[in-house]
Length: 180
Image (cartoon, rainbow, N blue to C red):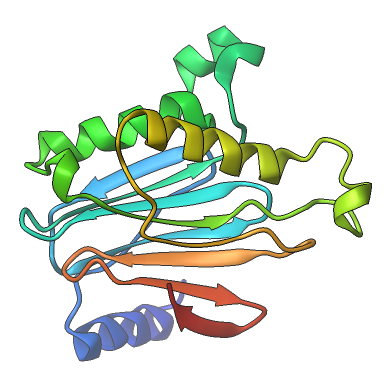
């Protein structure tokens, strides 16, 4: 990145009054209690972005999962738990608890879970739908509600931001930003 580009990014961050954005990669989880940060993940297709926020502890976390269950490859689940809903979600919550969050205060917002085919009926593996079902089942089993979601769609890609200070989740879909 050129010096002028770095300067422009720094100026934008300063103008927004933020410390910056921390990227959450595919099969990755990040948590923060830094009010100046936003957590961001890109290219949520059939994958899910799961954002959690405790407004009292000012702790937020963002998880980008690919698949519903690690039972298909236990070694992979052990090495990369954030890849799967059934191992990534507990990891997300535990990392937030480590920073002072409490389950009963957690606000959960979800995006992604799109169909991969040209239509729902052409989506052979239904990964997006299965991800959403696995998430809902695991949350229900643990007494946690989804507070907002934007899931489904056909060949839909979403970018998701979590503002650690406020818990606000912003989505960008087809170039249009909206609050979730």
